[in-house]
Length: 290
Image 1: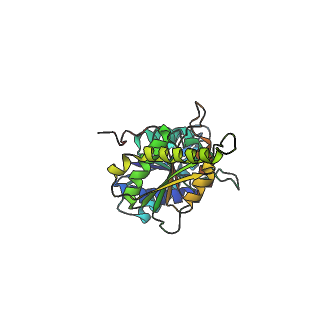
Image 2: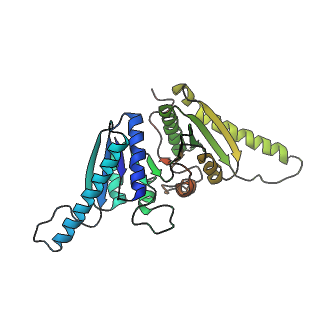
Image 3: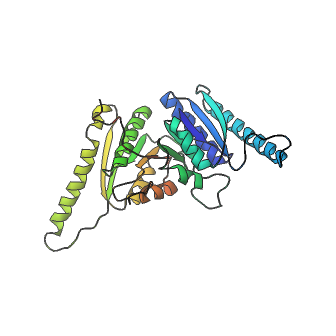
């Protein structure tokens, strides 16, 4: 099941359309959820502000109806259900996502400030949900035929690689595995060039070792290996400009203990040029799994 959160914004409706296409690829059902903050779903007719409550519920129901209609217009073959829930949208979506294979949200909702690139709900659920989270900010006008994934050798990065291979296979797309490194070399002199070559070779080896085994599980996926010295955000942002989907781990090797979302993932949520999936944890379906 794919879960998509909606709030009536154009970004949310774009997320619904994207989620429908994803559900079709996976042969999955779609659950459209709206979370109504700060108001109980049920209250007695004589309760204070009962009229306000009815107005809010009617508006929420209309919002869900519009989203479901959008989903069915996108692809009537996908099974769609809707659900209205009370509470804080971030907490409720994270809880609801425990039953989902993928959580999808728009990049910013009706409550966002003008000019902001990312809303609080999108930022609040990415890296915190128990399933991968797709944030739909920009959808390419035409299919590009490529899925890009950031590789850094971390457990969350491995989860991203597994998701990206499966996604590329579903889409019949090539997979661009990108490893960027910007750690400076210390010192100089006549041995600096040799040290640089050795560093580059080590980074290429890290990428190859991370990908080892996955190609065997997905022989239909063409893999493009890209190792580049540069800031990971800039390199991956550039890769996203030629991809249908960018996949990253929630936190890389440089992350501080306790942080659920790393700086690279955080920055790409704001600037990726295609839909972005943030994967967390270590996949149980890895190449060593039976």
